[in-house]
Amino acid sequence: MDVRALGLMRIAVGFVLLTDLFIRSLSIKAFFTDEGVLPIDVLKQYNWSPNYFSFHALSGDLWWQILLFIINAICILILIIGYRASVFTFICWVFLTSLQNRNPFILQGGDDMLRLLLLWASFLPWGERYSLQKKSSYQNSYFDWANFGYILLPASVFFFSALLKTSPEWRTEGTALYYALSLDQIRMPGGTLLYQFPLLMKILTYVVFYIELLAPFLLILPFVPSKIRLIGIISYVCLFIGIASTVYVGLFYIIGITSLIGLLPSSIIDWFEKRFYKSTTKYEETEHVQNTSFIIAFIQISRNYFVIFVAVFCLMMNLGSVKKFPYALDPSIVHYGKALRLEQNWGMFAPYILKDDGWFVYSALRNDRKYIDIKNNKDTVIYTKPKYGVCEFESDRWRKFQENYTFNNNNYMRPFYCKYLLNKWNKEHPDQPILDLTIFFMKETSLPNYKTEDIVKTAVCNCTEK
Image (cartoon, rainbow, N blue to C red; front, side):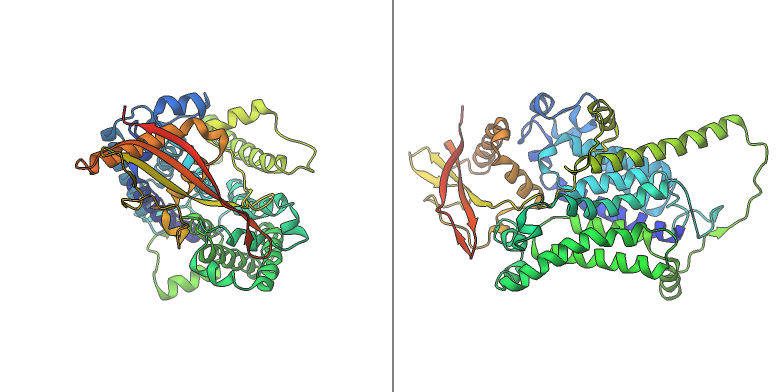
């Protein structure tokens, strides 16, 4: 790898972390306090492992969350400028893991990718270039055992996603993109345009599947020309951009593209420096002391074994998710892996596409015994389908939360969201408080040939002011 590419990735990842933190801060009270949708005692009862940690779960008060967000932002800024990058990479990983452990209902695949990317970066010298550091003992070309773990991450995302896509929609029918774009909750303008061409969607279904299956090999094959790896990177970028333009996936595509920067070949970095920036960091050849102390040698060997163990752990966890693979990690080993949050599952639209779509209706009873629509702020409850389903959500975090909200195995969390909406409305509208709130889900199931089943209206939760 080129150390300069890793330096560019550090800066890009830092800005992604800031963006993610800013988006979360817009709903900080709803997602991270006891006044929100998931109080700490409910989190600890239903969604917690003894090996998890979370500073954000130490207190349900708003001031505590704001303080942690501010400290987190400062650490990210220090990481961007490259001051003691290894230390602050680890600190940023701790903050991100803590934040993700506080509310698992708003997480998606991009969150796993970003968390694991920071973990691997803790072992990479991505602070040696484009940073405050003026001298470095690293040449531009760099090799370490941590390279394997880092390369496996972007390679695993799509390769195992392809292996998990076992349904006829992906393998034989070619209807996966049709069903994905039938979901109004996630269809973007580019998806709306593509949705009009069934033959093109069928062709692209197979194109996506085989890019996911084959492009990872272009990243991980050793002893191949840099142009081959570049073809793999370009294939990945095209796939990420295609996903972002058609379906609503939050920061997933940005995280994915950012994770590839460290793999850029030296020829690209040379071109970048020639045209835009010249690194001022000087490489100094240092003499290696022959009689290395036992402690330093022990630390280095332990580090390498740890890195290899984590890489094998992640690989086996992914292989274990494939049904035809005969081996899987023992649950006790997986349990210990939770301390580092090594869990990962790249089953994006796998094994099949979810066909149940729909929208929420919030019917509230006012003091004057009249039912109103608090989502649209109307005096009558509106049950009709929204024109643009993807615009119903403040962010992808809310979209993911409401997607999880509809699943029956999460019914224990429903009253808290209902109560949060009721209290929020009464606080913002003291002149017209509501006494009762019922949340309805209008389920619409996709069928072939642009048809749907009859809409099913279900009351998923009810709460009162008391």
